[in-house]
Image 1 (cartoon, rainbow, N blue to C red):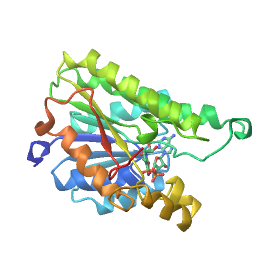
Image 2: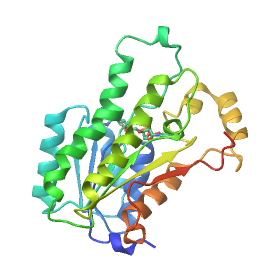
Image 3: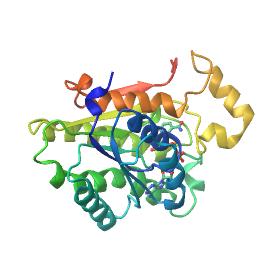
Image 4: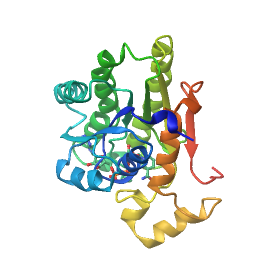
Length: 249
Ligand code: NAI
């Protein structure tokens, strides 16, 4: 399916865990060279060891930090000589709170990482992409970027915003041959998924709301991310792909 990705250089944020790690493994199997980044640099080694390539660099990157984003993007291009795709995956999953009970700093942190992080890395990557038609960004929203959720207003706000940002960037960059697409995962079995954190009863009730009767896996998101980067998706730009096993509402 994705042999067009062979030899391409991909930078992934949030690559130390969950969907970011699974996507690194998938892309390595397709022949990509990888820049794996995360705020938790120590766990990037485990991701790198699981990948099927030696063409890998790892770097500490807090996506909420614009200067760090610029530096890591520059170093990536210096190392590999090019950059083809960016997977903006770093993010903080939701914890349910009534608005008046939000912990101090929670709103600012989610906006800084989930939304401004995507902006920072996109902005830092762009100067390095200008000679490369065929490049793309894949950004991560959520089902909660498409429908409201009680007690998760802050997370919803960031994930709705990612869709607006991505669709607008798709219009701005399309004329240069750079595509911007979005994945909107449903309930995915990762260490910080809200149901997984809350325990087995919550996982069971999440599973019951899914037509396929189970949570998704990070690898099932990675498959779609790889497709969106590949030439098979070369006419997809500004698309939001829902990956949720079938949710009634
Ligand atoms: P995860 O917690 O397994 O992975 C997230 C990674 O992002 C972690 O390695 C973490 O260290 C990193 N990270 C956090 N703050 C960062 C920062 N400031 N700079 C750089 N890296 C940072 O979570 P998961 O589930 O794999 O989430 C990945 C993305 O998918 C997130 O954007 C999340 O909101 C989104 N998502 C997840 C869903 C799920 O059910 N797991 C559903 C819908 C969206």
